[in-house]
Length: 448
Ligand code: ADP
Ligand code: ASP
Ligand code: MG
Image (cartoon, rainbow, N blue to C red):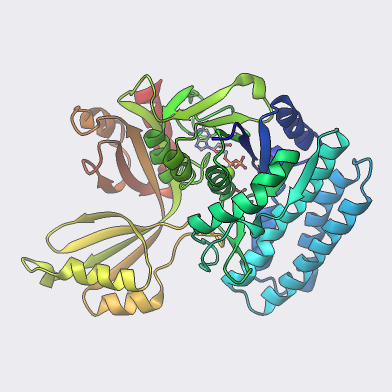
């Protein structure tokens, strides 16, 4: 394994000149950091998604494009030699303009990916130049030449063998001479068309790249000094976790802890690459190490929250004491590539939740065609505005704690409970309006 480190910087870490300079200092401090994966500047992807969803009013479009241009210009203006970067960023802004106009007539997932990729394409031009001006031998690399995916636009699936071969051929040699600055979140399909890995996908990109170049470490630099017992924005008394296992951290990411994209730890786990999470603003505060083997395995580790959940309830009196109903339901869902997340059943009804992390955002819809097919079997009820709360821990199947947990939740309306299927989590659906309060109450009871 080569002794080099991959460092990923999220949107707030590259939000402005000062933030980018702090990233550069972190990279300069560790000579093993040879590969840097950057997000778009803070807020830019959201603006690009707005454009990609189609804005009919030309003035409103122009206003958003001006906002995007200003975010970048403010940083470029502070560079010593801005000329080339300015040209490069302008060329990308022209793409943004023409794609935004096209999207105002007809939006599509393919066009969305092409458009939203522009955020990372711009930020990396600026970060690389800023680092060169600080004396780092930095070079920008277009990751679309390596990060091969399928053509499932909006949430593309990485093609691991191709990524590995392309990285060995194009990226590894470059890293021997330079600090390589590249984009998170984006890739390209077999035909070279731009794809994205879904919102928050830069973490996943960094892990995939770390795996492909057989890095010795992966650092995720963000705006909080590590992984906490829950989102510190929701529960101010949340505590930092110095060390956590891959499986616990994966559960947290899967259940919506925004700090890590859900798939981030898969590549790191496959290759046993230790992952560090820290704050680029306060690197001196340390952070969290995610490792295979850790010293403690507490019963309760963390609480995670995933918003934008959709619950589908299928009801059929014919289900009573018959067989094959669930098989038919899943056949329909599989045919339409609908991924089911949680499920509970009773004699005559089934409730399931749908999840969505693709680039277009919002809560998932059950497509009309799926609804129509399901309605041939049963009645179909779809509910939005729900959030999933997950309690994550260890050996949760064999230690009595239900009373303690549900005691806290007495006053809340629980819509679905999944208890006992995993020894690492207990989760339930609540109305989105009460989700934060649920987390605060549970955190106070179990962690404070
Ligand atoms: P980046 O842009 O660096 O990828 P994100 O906004 O995607 O940053 O993720 C960092 C945010 O994740 C934090 O600001 C915090 O609000 C949120 N978060 C959610 N759960 C946790 C947790 N358990 N520990 C720390 N942060 C969390
Ligand atoms: N810029 C992308 C997003 O905002 C990817 C990322 O930051 O991880 O979703
Ligand atoms: Mg993120």
